[in-house]
Image 1: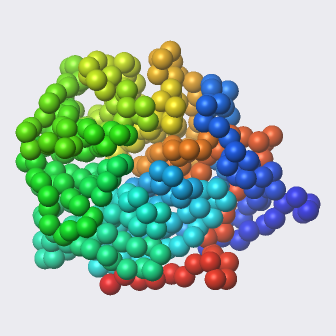
Image 2 (image 1 turned 90 degrees about the vertical axis):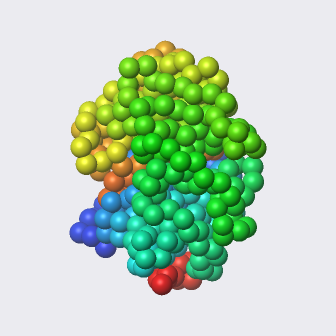
Image 3 (image 1 turned 120 degrees about the horizontal axis):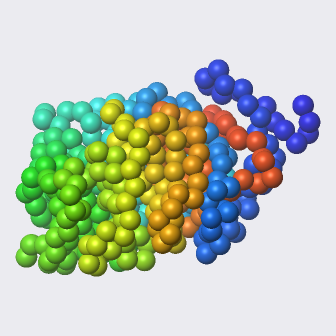
Length: 369
């Protein structure tokens, strides 16, 4: 073995080479400007790190808006916190009583909102406000009676929203236990705030997207968009960082980019069916590209303005259930039962499997009861 390479033994029987060039690429990523994104950079994206010791599918993941952090929630009841600048697992906590389903960061880099998978009928504790710093549940939020399928945090204050299969959207405040508002809807509700926190979108039955003023949502929606001819349920909504576009992913594997002001369809794409896994799509932070998983296990990238496919990759992890681009970095994360970090390829640097065993003093595993 050369001095430029290091062998790492994983928990599972995987033995790979971790290249010094790959570690350098993660360090260089910290200075990479998102204004430099172009077709060549997007095409160069390749796996830079792999974390494969999850005991089941990764249900959701989220990047912090301002810090180099990512959090995951998995079927093995774990919540895991990562430093994306160094590709390092920082902490793992387990939640055997409630499970871990949908997750998002609050404004604090060590705090998250996590939805429950178990005991919804008996405890009603459908949402939890968790501190990853000192391993405490800071608050329970009761109300939803069925699984939560969408959670999002306001970018400007302590409000957050949840959409549930009980056909309701609830609006909450981190500072109090009680629900601040309820919207009763038909179908599977999906929710998202725009990047300014002034507007939120709710998808409902029949492919309808309703827009609300977050300061006066009790007055009802101020606009309604319909994706022409497609009445499939929307399973995910995202706003672009400039607030001009809205990204919809539907249960029948269609992806749409809408004008966020007029509702007009800017472009649309279809991917291979994925009967057992919902597909997630993501904007790049400059709003110029869309990435999506596919039922055939591939990842695709399209230019929004030119409406053409820019790149296609084998995900190497099967059908990705989660896909998000980091807000401030030339990097995205894709996950199934395995979590992968993708970064611009640096002179064919070898993909890295990062050891999930923490260094002494850097992490301890805790069990939430």
